Amino acid sequence: MLPQLAKAARTLAKASKIRTEELDLVAEHDADLDVAALWAAVEEAVPRTAVSSAVAMVEALVPEDDGSAEAAMRAKPALRYNTVRPFLSLLGESDAPGSARWSYAAPRATASTPCTLCRTSTAG
Image (cartoon, rainbow, N blue to C red; front, side, top):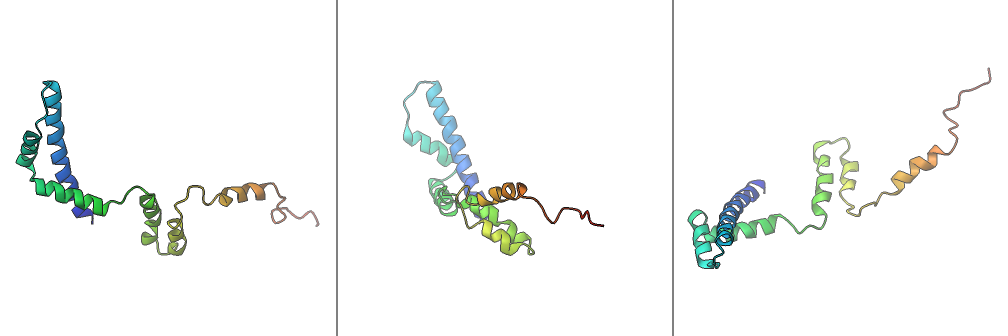
């Protein structure tokens, strides 16, 4: 997946750079935009079919921003650390922010209760 995405990104970067330079020239000289000339300049470096294919590749490999990328990044450590794999994979299942609010409330609640296990014995 990554080599295909990298190739598509390079293709789009070349085309975008040329397009931006040409548009800057049009704006600088206050000229009318000639779309055919713009495409001709882009096609000198990158064929139009390659640009279309690169756009399709990026659209296929990069989903709309629905939080799935963040969930995937949270689940990625599960592939690396076998010991905690069952626990880390659960992190990627929820994409709702603040879905584990109880994890912040539990330490505060236990901090206000007396710790009977931590007390030292005075009998003796």
